[in-house]
Image (cartoon, rainbow, N blue to C red; front, side, top):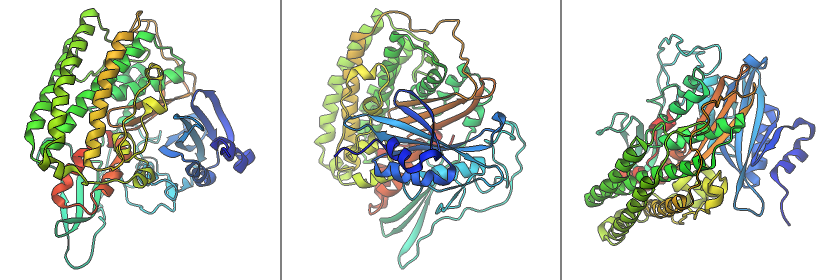
Length: 533
């Protein structure tokens, strides 16, 4: 017996309380439901196999309303390898800004709701952790920067406070603080370990040290300018984040992208994926003291970045995409250069894969280290290569494709052990697949314009929203935009893969030894900047 679609179950459960706001978008359904019922809706979605993709809030006072809670669920389409998104909007009164926590159904809500509390002053009833998250303890009381009554240049008065860490007790238990400033050039993040001997009992992360106010900054920009800011959210995902922004804006404003531009976008996205996976595989080997692979894969990565600079004007492909198209095209010589590059890269990469796989001392460090089981990955709502290494299909190029991925038939790489080795192997398979996809894209690249018309103006209707979902190299990026009363940028929500996958690292290290933490951490390689918006 086939289970009914989740939206049908929701309608039967809530009757007249549930309202359909927008059912016109392919793969996206927008509903409204009272806030005190949202936890029951989450339970129904969970039972149907759905996942909490994002949870955020808006200040709708410019529309004559109050606050609102938004939840985005990714739910499987019956008898299909695809997902669809159900977005539920719930009004929240300013005088009593409360809603029941979703943490009982979705662990990902644990941090989403702490961020909502910090930025909007909306609290979740029953949440197990009342500590601030991005909002550190020295923010003044009553300062909620994403509310509309707080200007972008509002004065900030520091207050005194302390952060209460989770502590372990018992004979032989000791604590190891790491960070927030590290012995390298990486961004700041604080990790607290409890251990007995070298065995890790618990890890708690504290991020937020590079919070930049990006979502607030979006509100002072035009729709075109927003693409440039999106490309600066996380420096290793410049193209993916800018693409998610453009997809959201284009959906909201009804902008059609020229076919050539759509295929070029896929080309650039796959080049970004290859470059980062090459760097990661080498860095993981280096954390096991096998520096040879780091040197060789860094050389291959550098060659990819140099060709990016030569053909597209920027090593990291920054500002190569705009709403309605791309800002860089490719001629016949460029196509030939990339095809030659892919042949050379593939041959050298495969030799290095053999070296990785046949080195006993390296395999001893990565096999069975940092395991995340399939159940844990599902319970935490993990995404990207981390989820796929634990046996969970999650590639948005397959499960929620946009042109031209709806024609490319991406082969999704999955493994089952969920250890460091499997997270490496998913990256290996994705490099191979990206090489194949690039060859196919260049063979099928359509003619016509790549740039949008010079007369293109983004003029959305007041209150309209748009959703952009992209499989970046780390995993699923979700960007949501909302137009204001005059069609301006009213609210932007960005959910980087790191915002859910950091939770997985805390579980992966349990039972491992302290010296294996760098391997576990690098095998996740989550973004501080992408988290600390």
